[in-house]
Image (cartoon, rainbow, N blue to C red; front, top):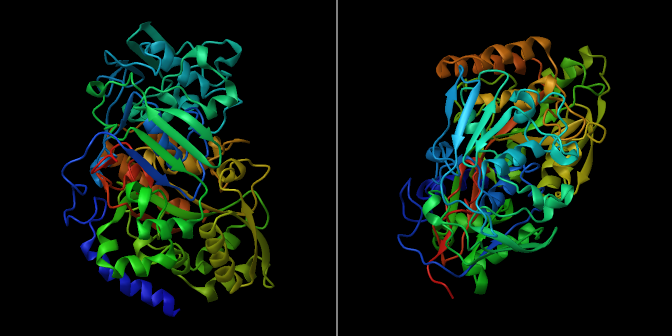
Length: 557
């Protein structure tokens, strides 16, 4: 308990750190440094692995951050700290698209001069093929939007067998038309997802494409040792004049994977040798927070990135006894959210979450349906017929942070007789495993960042029962309410954004009565940068991680 109080006290020291922006200059909108050089080697120290780099399968924020260096999409998030980073801007396309037929048809025009890494022009057919790949049963991990919204998508099995999806039209090399089965007012944001990256058909490699996606961005893969290191070098055919987002400053970017988090902290704190040219990919560990916040020199190199992410505990409603709402509510009342925040670093890691939608998302409502109440939790278990408690299994990443969070859940739920067994899963396979309905257990350390700012890619993605699939499942609560599903459809066709946001907020309140998940943290990401690094800020699209597309070095050595 004393350590927790110390971390809370240390949060006062964050007043001098620009949240969501660059380190040390005291401003809230500009990254540190005013000048950068082109060249040098940027090092990225990561304590986690990359889940997938294939754009059809890339649906984890860390991998999406890296993927944006390698491939471009029709639109993308702006390169900016804080809330402005949530804006969607043109990328390969000349604009955010032209809707017709009541937003059931969307047309995009590719910029002139965009090329692949071998110098050939990127065409609309390459984009079409990239989107079609997300239907392939062999590549199930990507977002559901193409399957949900493109006409004829229900029975389509992807292009690997030679079949074409007629609802994507390419009347010429620079024009692509999407015909949807319903109005989608924000489809211009949908096409910012990785699976809208172009893929040349002659580079198709099925599942092996994961190891070497073909570059349309400023960098291409020179060497990839899965689970260990990926080395990126310049794509000489990338034209900066066509790209207003990526800066492409370093000559090389070397990302070391699966490093010991404590070692990463130690190296970044020392900042010696090539680590002066490094950025930390995951947040600083709880054990390093005090040292960083009380040392002015280190604090000068600290970046705190904002996010739109909520971390939560998913409760598998398809498994007994979590199929009973009173048991799920007991979990919600018993979970010690402060303990979970403490093992993630304390207040520097974010704010205690009480609702599914974070304050940064339109529709958020100030409420706390499940304040800590151990007596209430015990009473609910007894009413459900489990006065002697229940046994549950928790899936968590096999990382020090994952283990610590698992132990925090185990200890807090144990106070009311909920006995938790911790099942650690390799970080490189974690999301694929818990996204497999045959492999997932009772509880999952979970979280969600909307695919673009707004509740439309938050609540339906994780709580619409019709999106439950055997593999690549995002609804890890396995929550399926006919009433809620119907309301999703009704809100989805609203054209008034403010009314839709209000409706989503009301629906979130309704969902929480069923307690399919327990929110515990609205994320921030605090990470260190080397003394020779400039332009670093945390991006809301990547849970506050560094936006790798804009980082440079003060001097190239």
